[in-house]
Amino acid sequence: MTSIESKRVQYRKYLERAGVIDALSKALIKLYEEQNKPEDAIRFVRKFMCESCPDDAQYDLMKNDLDEAKTTIARLEQELERLRGQIKKSPEEYQELTMAGYKSLIDDEENVSSLLRKYLTPELLEEYMLVTTPSPVDAYLYDCAVSGFEHHDAPVGIYAADPECYDVFTKLFDPIIREYHGQEENDSDMLQKDVDWGNVDEIENLDAERKYILSTRIRLSRNIEGLPFFPKLTEKQLIEVEDKIRAATETMDGELIGTYLTMGDIDTETQQEMVKRNVLFARGEGYLQTAGCYRFWPTGRGVYHNPAETFMIWSNEEDHVRVISAAQCGDLGDVYQRLVTGIQELEKNLTFIRHPSYGNLTACPTNLGTTLRASVHIRLPLLSKDEERLKVMSEELSLTIHGTGGEHTSIEDGVMDISNKRRMGFTEFELVKSLQDGIVALINAEEELEIAGQEG
Ligand code: ADP
Ligand code: MG
Image 1 (cartoon, rainbow, N blue to C red):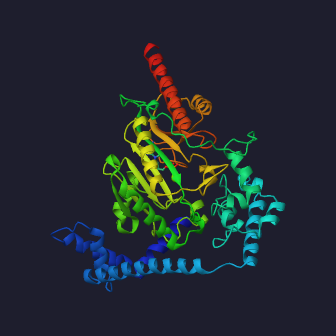
Image 2: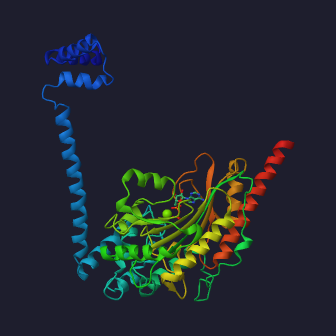
Image 3: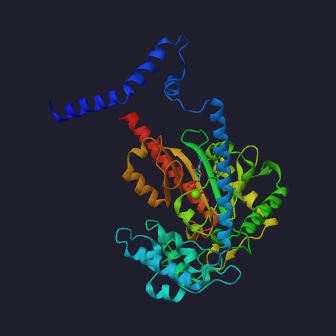
C-alpha cells in the first residue's frame, strides 16, 4: 500500500471511530426521508447534526446583539478619534516620528520615485523638523509628510496640512510643485495665471451623434479661507465647512437648484448607489487615509446636487469643496457652462484661498493652479488597439489616460477616462479648450482608421 492510501485508510478508521460517518449518514437518511425537501439543505443537515445550535429565535437575538455591538464599536472608534485629536504631540515626539519616518523612506531602496524622497534632503529635514505653521494650527512637516513616510510608492508623498505650509516649508514644496507641473524652466514667481473662464461658447459638443463619448465631467477643488486643510481640520471645523456650503448653495438658480444631503443621513445602500452614479464619494485609498483624510467620518461630509445629477458640490471629500459638472454625453460645452455658472455663484457667498504663485490652494500639490480636471469617458475601439500610437498622441496633446473608474483603475470594456494632464500655468479656458482639441484629434484618428478598415 502506498503511503497516501495508508493515510486514507487511517483517516477513514478515525472518522468511523469518532462517530462522524454515523452522524453524517443519519443526517443524509433523514434528508432522504423528508417529504418536503428543504430549499436550504445545508441548513437542514447542520440543524440535524447540531444538538446545541441556537434555534431561529435565538439566532435572531444573537444577530441583534451583534449589530448593536457593531454600532457601539463604531461610536467608540469615533470617540477614540476625537480624544486622539485632543492629544497634542510634544515637539520631541514630532522629532522622533519625523526621523523614524524619514529613515524608513530613505532606507527603502526599492521605492525611490516619490518626490518627497527626492527633495527632502537631510539638511532640509534638520531645518524644518521643528518648525510649525502659525497657531492655532501648528502644522509640522510631519503632518504633511506622514503619508509619504508610510507609503513609499506614492508618486508625490506630501500634502499641505494648511495653506501656510506652502510658504513655511517652501524649500520642499516649491521644487515638488515645479517638477510635478512641468514648471522647472519657468523663472517667474507666478506659476499660475489669473482666473479666466474665457468665451464659454467656444466649447462645444464633441460627439453630437453619441458615437464615442459616454460621459463628460469637469471638477474643481476649492478650500475656504481661514481654515486648515483636511490633515488638520477639527471636528468642529468639518461641520463649519459643511454649514457654509449648505448656506452658500441656497441661492443657486435654474438648473443648479438642488438639495444638500449630509452623509450621516444617507443609508449605506443608498450611499453605494450614489457613489456608483458618481453623485457621491466614498472613503478612498490608503495614501489619503494615512494623511488623515477620513478622521471623524462621516461628520461634515455630504453632497449638494440637482435632480438631474449634472451638478454636484461635495463637502469635505479631500478639499473642503469640490464642484462637479457632468453629462451622460459628449457635450463639453454644456458641462463647462454649468460649471462656470456654479462656481461663480458659490464665490458670491464663499471666499476661497488663493496663493500669489500657485493659484487656488489645495491640500494635494498635484491639484494646485486651476484645480481643473476635465474628462470624457470615451470608447475608441480601433485606436485603443494601438497602444503605442495612443500613448504618443496623448503625450503630444497633453492628455492623461486613466482607467474607467478614475485614477489607479483599469480600462474596462475599452472605455478610457481621458483628461487634461496639466492643471497649472494655464487658464481654465485654455485647459478645457486643449481637452476639446485633443479629443477631436483622437476621434478624427479613430474615424480615419474606420475608413481605412472599410477600404482595406
Ligand atoms: P478626480 O480627479 O475628480 O479625483 P477620479 O479619477 O478620482 O477623479 O474619479 C472620480 C470619479 O469620477 C470616478 O468614479 C470616475 O469614474 C468618475 N469620473 C471621472 N470622469 C468621468 C467621466 N468623464 N464620466 C463619468 N465618470 C467620470
Ligand atoms: Mg479622486
